Image (tube, rainbow, N blue to C red; front, side, top):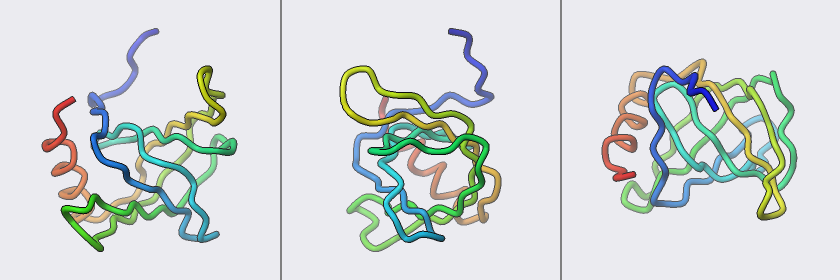
Length: 111
């Protein structure tokens, strides 16, 4: 498969839940991230081409800290090994502080 990302993504080594701010529901768990986008694992399908306001609960090291951002869902696919869905997002709205938080996560994760 051809790589279309402008920035490489790194796998997470800590659990980060992703909440839909508008519905208050857990959308899924972050799988990987880059400064421009991310992938999450969800228990239910995520509509493609939809805009979301999301809140990411940061790792325990940053206890109580959250990151809010706007993102567009680009695709959603069934997983092959477990019940659930992979969904890809492009970050479309993020604060300067949020950019720093994503960069810090990206820089600190080894994979």
